[in-house]
Length: 354
View 1 (cartoon, rainbow, N blue to C red):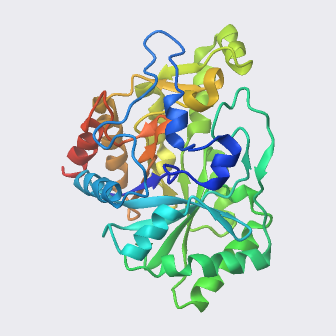
View 2 (view 1 turned 90 degrees about the vertical axis):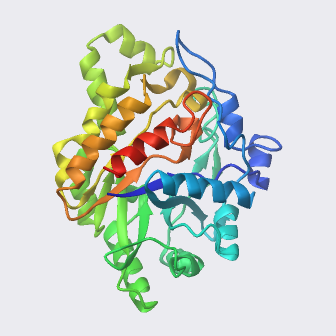
Protein backbone atom coordinates (compact mmCIF):
# COMPACT_ATOMS: atom_id res chain seq x y z
CA UNK A 1 0.00 0.00 0.00
CA UNK A 2 1.57 3.25 -1.21
CA UNK A 3 0.59 5.89 1.35
CA UNK A 4 1.05 9.52 0.27
CA UNK A 5 0.34 12.10 2.98
CA UNK A 6 -1.13 15.54 2.28
CA UNK A 7 1.26 18.11 3.69
CA UNK A 8 0.30 21.66 4.66
CA UNK A 9 3.17 24.19 4.34
CA UNK A 10 1.49 26.98 6.33
CA UNK A 11 3.80 26.74 9.32
CA UNK A 12 5.93 29.78 8.58
CA UNK A 13 5.08 33.45 8.35
CA UNK A 14 4.63 35.13 4.96
CA UNK A 15 4.01 38.84 4.19
CA UNK A 16 0.54 38.17 2.80
CA UNK A 17 -0.67 36.42 5.95
CA UNK A 18 0.95 39.12 8.07
CA UNK A 19 -1.14 41.68 6.18
CA UNK A 20 -4.39 39.72 6.20
CA UNK A 21 -4.32 38.17 9.68
CA UNK A 22 -1.68 39.95 11.71
CA UNK A 23 2.07 39.77 12.21
CA UNK A 24 3.41 36.24 12.55
CA UNK A 25 0.25 34.36 11.54
CA UNK A 26 0.75 30.65 10.81
CA UNK A 27 -1.41 27.55 11.13
CA UNK A 28 -0.41 27.45 14.78
CA UNK A 29 -2.41 30.66 15.30
CA UNK A 30 -5.61 28.80 14.42
CA UNK A 31 -4.60 25.78 16.49
CA UNK A 32 -3.96 27.86 19.61
CA UNK A 33 -7.37 29.52 19.16
CA UNK A 34 -9.17 26.18 19.53
CA UNK A 35 -11.72 26.06 22.35
CA UNK A 36 -13.74 23.19 23.84
CA UNK A 37 -17.34 23.47 22.58
CA UNK A 38 -18.89 20.63 24.59
CA UNK A 39 -18.04 18.38 27.53
CA UNK A 40 -15.06 16.21 26.73
CA UNK A 41 -14.12 18.13 23.57
CA UNK A 42 -10.33 17.86 23.15
CA UNK A 43 -9.47 21.46 22.28
CA UNK A 44 -7.06 23.08 21.91
CA UNK A 45 -4.77 20.33 20.65
CA UNK A 46 -1.05 20.66 21.32
CA UNK A 47 1.88 19.33 19.28
CA UNK A 48 4.13 16.69 20.77
CA UNK A 49 7.83 16.13 20.20
CA UNK A 50 8.13 18.45 17.16
CA UNK A 51 6.63 21.37 19.08
CA UNK A 52 5.22 24.52 17.47
CA UNK A 53 7.67 24.17 14.62
CA UNK A 54 8.66 26.45 11.76
CA UNK A 55 8.87 24.67 8.40
CA UNK A 56 11.78 26.87 7.35
CA UNK A 57 13.83 24.88 9.87
CA UNK A 58 15.60 22.11 7.90
CA UNK A 59 15.94 19.95 11.03
CA UNK A 60 12.15 19.90 11.44
CA UNK A 61 11.68 18.71 7.87
CA UNK A 62 14.27 15.97 8.39
CA UNK A 63 12.55 14.78 11.56
CA UNK A 64 9.17 14.76 9.81
CA UNK A 65 10.57 12.66 6.98
CA UNK A 66 12.10 10.18 9.43
CA UNK A 67 8.82 9.81 11.35
CA UNK A 68 6.87 9.37 8.13
CA UNK A 69 9.26 6.78 6.70
CA UNK A 70 9.21 4.75 9.91
CA UNK A 71 5.38 4.70 9.81
CA UNK A 72 5.23 3.43 6.23
CA UNK A 73 4.44 6.73 4.51
CA UNK A 74 6.01 6.80 1.05
CA UNK A 75 6.05 10.57 0.61
CA UNK A 76 4.39 13.94 1.09
CA UNK A 77 1.93 15.67 -1.21
CA UNK A 78 2.74 19.34 -0.67
CA UNK A 79 -0.20 21.68 -1.04
CA UNK A 80 0.76 24.06 -3.84
CA UNK A 81 -0.69 27.56 -4.21
CA UNK A 82 -0.49 29.30 -7.60
CA UNK A 83 -2.42 32.47 -8.41
CA UNK A 84 -1.71 33.73 -11.92
CA UNK A 85 2.06 33.62 -11.53
CA UNK A 86 2.16 34.30 -7.80
CA UNK A 87 2.96 31.46 -5.41
CA UNK A 88 2.21 31.39 -1.70
CA UNK A 89 3.70 29.20 1.03
CA UNK A 90 6.25 27.86 -1.46
CA UNK A 91 9.38 28.31 0.65
CA UNK A 92 9.49 24.95 2.50
CA UNK A 93 9.42 22.93 -0.73
CA UNK A 94 11.72 25.45 -2.40
CA UNK A 95 14.28 24.82 0.33
CA UNK A 96 13.81 21.06 -0.03
CA UNK A 97 14.52 21.42 -3.75
CA UNK A 98 17.59 23.62 -3.27
CA UNK A 99 19.16 21.58 -0.49
CA UNK A 100 18.30 18.10 -1.74
CA UNK A 101 17.18 17.28 1.78
CA UNK A 102 15.38 15.45 3.16
CA UNK A 103 15.88 12.57 0.74
CA UNK A 104 12.20 11.74 0.93
CA UNK A 105 9.67 11.50 -1.93
CA UNK A 106 7.13 14.24 -2.62
CA UNK A 107 4.59 15.45 -5.15
CA UNK A 108 2.32 18.46 -5.61
CA UNK A 109 -1.35 18.97 -4.82
CA UNK A 110 -2.62 22.12 -6.50
CA UNK A 111 -5.03 23.81 -4.09
CA UNK A 112 -6.83 25.69 -6.87
CA UNK A 113 -9.22 27.82 -4.87
CA UNK A 114 -9.44 31.50 -4.05
CA UNK A 115 -8.45 32.62 -0.59
CA UNK A 116 -11.16 34.51 1.22
CA UNK A 117 -11.33 35.99 4.69
CA UNK A 118 -13.02 32.83 5.94
CA UNK A 119 -10.29 30.49 4.71
CA UNK A 120 -7.98 30.24 7.72
CA UNK A 121 -9.59 31.80 10.78
CA UNK A 122 -13.08 31.96 12.30
CA UNK A 123 -15.30 30.84 9.43
CA UNK A 124 -18.39 31.54 11.50
CA UNK A 125 -17.90 35.28 11.95
CA UNK A 126 -15.17 36.40 9.52
CA UNK A 127 -16.35 38.59 6.63
CA UNK A 128 -16.40 36.76 3.31
CA UNK A 129 -14.05 39.04 1.38
CA UNK A 130 -11.65 38.09 -1.41
CA UNK A 131 -7.97 38.04 -0.47
CA UNK A 132 -6.45 36.51 -3.60
CA UNK A 133 -8.45 35.10 -6.48
CA UNK A 134 -7.83 31.87 -8.37
CA UNK A 135 -7.98 32.60 -12.11
CA UNK A 136 -7.51 30.43 -15.18
CA UNK A 137 -6.22 30.88 -18.72
CA UNK A 138 -4.28 28.91 -21.31
CA UNK A 139 -1.36 31.33 -20.99
CA UNK A 140 -1.36 30.92 -17.22
CA UNK A 141 -1.33 27.12 -17.60
CA UNK A 142 1.86 27.38 -19.64
CA UNK A 143 3.52 29.65 -17.09
CA UNK A 144 2.35 27.40 -14.26
CA UNK A 145 3.73 24.26 -15.90
CA UNK A 146 7.09 25.90 -16.57
CA UNK A 147 7.27 27.05 -12.96
CA UNK A 148 6.79 23.55 -11.54
CA UNK A 149 8.78 21.70 -14.22
CA UNK A 150 12.01 21.60 -12.15
CA UNK A 151 9.99 20.09 -9.30
CA UNK A 152 8.48 17.44 -11.57
CA UNK A 153 11.98 16.52 -12.75
CA UNK A 154 13.41 16.11 -9.25
CA UNK A 155 14.59 12.53 -8.66
CA UNK A 156 12.47 12.38 -5.49
CA UNK A 157 9.23 13.30 -7.25
CA UNK A 158 6.56 10.60 -6.87
CA UNK A 159 5.49 8.81 -10.03
CA UNK A 160 2.66 6.42 -10.87
CA UNK A 161 3.09 4.22 -13.94
CA UNK A 162 6.21 6.20 -14.81
CA UNK A 163 4.36 9.54 -14.75
CA UNK A 164 4.67 12.38 -12.21
CA UNK A 165 1.66 12.50 -9.89
CA UNK A 166 -0.17 15.84 -9.86
CA UNK A 167 -3.27 16.22 -7.69
CA UNK A 168 -5.93 18.88 -8.35
CA UNK A 169 -8.04 19.85 -5.35
CA UNK A 170 -11.05 21.37 -7.12
CA UNK A 171 -11.39 19.85 -10.60
CA UNK A 172 -14.91 21.27 -10.99
CA UNK A 173 -13.51 24.80 -10.74
CA UNK A 174 -11.54 24.32 -13.95
CA UNK A 175 -13.43 26.27 -16.66
CA UNK A 176 -12.98 23.40 -19.14
CA UNK A 177 -11.69 20.28 -17.43
CA UNK A 178 -11.19 18.29 -20.64
CA UNK A 179 -9.19 21.05 -22.27
CA UNK A 180 -7.13 21.53 -19.10
CA UNK A 181 -6.13 17.87 -18.76
CA UNK A 182 -5.37 17.59 -22.47
CA UNK A 183 -3.21 20.71 -22.36
CA UNK A 184 -1.26 19.60 -19.29
CA UNK A 185 -0.73 16.10 -20.65
CA UNK A 186 0.64 17.54 -23.89
CA UNK A 187 2.94 19.95 -22.05
CA UNK A 188 4.27 17.04 -19.99
CA UNK A 189 4.94 14.95 -23.10
CA UNK A 190 6.63 17.91 -24.81
CA UNK A 191 8.88 18.15 -21.74
CA UNK A 192 9.96 14.53 -22.16
CA UNK A 193 7.59 12.74 -19.77
CA UNK A 194 5.26 9.88 -20.68
CA UNK A 195 2.56 12.22 -19.42
CA UNK A 196 1.17 13.10 -16.00
CA UNK A 197 -0.77 10.94 -13.58
CA UNK A 198 -3.59 13.39 -12.88
CA UNK A 199 -5.50 12.80 -9.66
CA UNK A 200 -8.73 14.69 -8.99
CA UNK A 201 -9.95 15.30 -5.44
CA UNK A 202 -13.68 14.87 -4.66
CA UNK A 203 -15.82 14.80 -1.50
CA UNK A 204 -18.82 12.90 -2.90
CA UNK A 205 -19.05 9.52 -4.58
CA UNK A 206 -21.47 10.93 -7.17
CA UNK A 207 -18.69 13.21 -8.49
CA UNK A 208 -16.36 10.40 -9.58
CA UNK A 209 -17.58 9.83 -13.13
CA UNK A 210 -17.64 13.53 -13.99
CA UNK A 211 -14.02 13.97 -12.96
CA UNK A 212 -12.87 10.87 -14.84
CA UNK A 213 -14.72 12.17 -17.91
CA UNK A 214 -12.55 15.30 -17.77
CA UNK A 215 -9.51 13.13 -18.46
CA UNK A 216 -8.18 12.59 -14.96
CA UNK A 217 -6.44 9.25 -14.50
CA UNK A 218 -7.98 8.65 -11.10
CA UNK A 219 -10.00 10.24 -8.34
CA UNK A 220 -9.03 10.61 -4.70
CA UNK A 221 -12.34 10.20 -2.92
CA UNK A 222 -12.29 11.94 0.46
CA UNK A 223 -15.95 11.29 1.30
CA UNK A 224 -16.42 13.92 3.97
CA UNK A 225 -19.45 15.21 2.06
CA UNK A 226 -21.03 11.75 1.98
CA UNK A 227 -20.08 11.23 5.63
CA UNK A 228 -21.74 14.41 6.82
CA UNK A 229 -24.88 13.69 4.77
CA UNK A 230 -25.12 10.17 6.21
CA UNK A 231 -24.71 11.52 9.73
CA UNK A 232 -27.51 14.03 9.22
CA UNK A 233 -29.77 11.24 8.00
CA UNK A 234 -28.76 8.98 10.88
CA UNK A 235 -29.39 11.58 13.57
CA UNK A 236 -33.05 12.03 12.66
CA UNK A 237 -33.19 14.76 15.26
CA UNK A 238 -34.22 18.00 13.60
CA UNK A 239 -33.47 20.35 16.53
CA UNK A 240 -29.83 19.17 16.52
CA UNK A 241 -29.52 19.69 12.77
CA UNK A 242 -31.16 23.11 12.88
CA UNK A 243 -28.82 24.26 15.66
CA UNK A 244 -25.83 23.14 13.61
CA UNK A 245 -27.04 24.75 10.38
CA UNK A 246 -27.66 28.02 12.22
CA UNK A 247 -24.15 27.99 13.67
CA UNK A 248 -25.25 27.32 17.23
CA UNK A 249 -23.83 23.85 17.74
CA UNK A 250 -21.09 21.69 16.16
CA UNK A 251 -22.12 18.48 14.44
CA UNK A 252 -20.52 15.72 16.52
CA UNK A 253 -20.45 12.05 15.60
CA UNK A 254 -18.47 8.98 16.60
CA UNK A 255 -15.29 8.53 14.55
CA UNK A 256 -15.54 4.73 14.23
CA UNK A 257 -19.06 5.02 12.79
CA UNK A 258 -18.38 8.06 10.63
CA UNK A 259 -15.30 6.55 9.03
CA UNK A 260 -17.07 3.48 7.63
CA UNK A 261 -17.95 5.23 4.37
CA UNK A 262 -14.20 5.62 3.68
CA UNK A 263 -14.08 1.84 3.09
CA UNK A 264 -17.21 1.58 0.94
CA UNK A 265 -17.41 -0.67 -2.15
CA UNK A 266 -16.55 2.12 -4.58
CA UNK A 267 -12.99 2.12 -3.17
CA UNK A 268 -12.46 -1.22 -4.93
CA UNK A 269 -12.42 0.52 -8.31
CA UNK A 270 -8.98 0.90 -9.89
CA UNK A 271 -9.70 4.54 -10.76
CA UNK A 272 -10.58 5.42 -7.16
CA UNK A 273 -7.78 6.20 -4.71
CA UNK A 274 -9.00 5.68 -1.12
CA UNK A 275 -8.25 7.97 1.81
CA UNK A 276 -7.21 7.20 5.35
CA UNK A 277 -8.22 9.81 7.90
CA UNK A 278 -6.84 9.91 11.47
CA UNK A 279 -9.50 12.36 12.64
CA UNK A 280 -11.56 15.45 11.87
CA UNK A 281 -12.27 18.49 14.01
CA UNK A 282 -12.62 21.73 12.09
CA UNK A 283 -13.65 23.76 15.14
CA UNK A 284 -10.47 25.90 15.46
CA UNK A 285 -11.50 27.45 12.13
CA UNK A 286 -15.28 27.12 11.99
CA UNK A 287 -16.32 27.18 15.65
CA UNK A 288 -19.98 26.18 16.12
CA UNK A 289 -20.36 25.32 12.42
CA UNK A 290 -17.72 22.62 12.81
CA UNK A 291 -18.08 18.96 11.99
CA UNK A 292 -16.28 16.89 14.63
CA UNK A 293 -15.48 13.19 14.56
CA UNK A 294 -15.40 12.33 18.24
CA UNK A 295 -13.40 9.54 19.89
CA UNK A 296 -10.76 9.16 17.21
CA UNK A 297 -8.25 6.90 18.96
CA UNK A 298 -5.13 5.12 17.69
CA UNK A 299 -6.93 1.79 17.98
CA UNK A 300 -9.93 3.00 15.96
CA UNK A 301 -7.55 4.49 13.39
CA UNK A 302 -5.66 1.20 13.12
CA UNK A 303 -8.93 -0.62 12.36
CA UNK A 304 -9.74 1.99 9.72
CA UNK A 305 -6.31 1.65 8.06
CA UNK A 306 -6.60 -2.14 8.12
CA UNK A 307 -9.98 -1.95 6.36
CA UNK A 308 -8.48 0.22 3.61
CA UNK A 309 -5.47 -2.06 3.26
CA UNK A 310 -7.72 -5.12 2.79
CA UNK A 311 -9.33 -3.32 -0.14
CA UNK A 312 -6.10 -2.04 -1.69
CA UNK A 313 -4.29 -5.37 -1.40
CA UNK A 314 -6.77 -6.79 -3.93
CA UNK A 315 -6.22 -3.99 -6.46
CA UNK A 316 -3.48 -3.23 -8.96
CA UNK A 317 -3.64 0.45 -8.04
CA UNK A 318 -2.20 0.43 -4.53
CA UNK A 319 -2.18 4.21 -4.04
CA UNK A 320 -3.75 5.60 -0.85
CA UNK A 321 -3.85 9.22 0.32
CA UNK A 322 -3.42 10.04 3.99
CA UNK A 323 -5.39 13.12 4.99
CA UNK A 324 -3.28 14.48 6.49
CA UNK A 325 0.25 14.69 7.81
CA UNK A 326 -0.18 18.05 9.54
CA UNK A 327 -3.59 19.69 9.06
CA UNK A 328 -3.71 20.65 12.72
CA UNK A 329 -6.40 23.32 12.24
CA UNK A 330 -8.76 20.70 10.79
CA UNK A 331 -7.98 18.06 13.38
CA UNK A 332 -6.68 15.68 10.72
CA UNK A 333 -3.01 15.11 11.42
CA UNK A 334 -0.85 12.13 12.23
CA UNK A 335 2.15 13.93 13.67
CA UNK A 336 2.78 13.34 17.38
CA UNK A 337 0.65 15.37 19.77
CA UNK A 338 0.72 15.70 23.55
CA UNK A 339 -2.23 13.43 24.11
CA UNK A 340 -1.26 10.40 22.02
CA UNK A 341 2.42 10.88 21.23
CA UNK A 342 3.39 8.66 18.28
CA UNK A 343 0.54 6.20 18.70
CA UNK A 344 -1.27 7.14 15.47
CA UNK A 345 2.00 6.79 13.54
CA UNK A 346 2.63 3.45 15.25
CA UNK A 347 -0.87 2.28 14.30
CA UNK A 348 -0.22 3.04 10.64
CA UNK A 349 3.20 1.40 10.76
CA UNK A 350 1.81 -1.73 12.39
CA UNK A 351 -0.74 -2.23 9.60
CA UNK A 352 1.79 -1.41 6.88
CA UNK A 353 4.24 -4.00 8.21
CA UNK A 354 1.77 -6.88 8.43
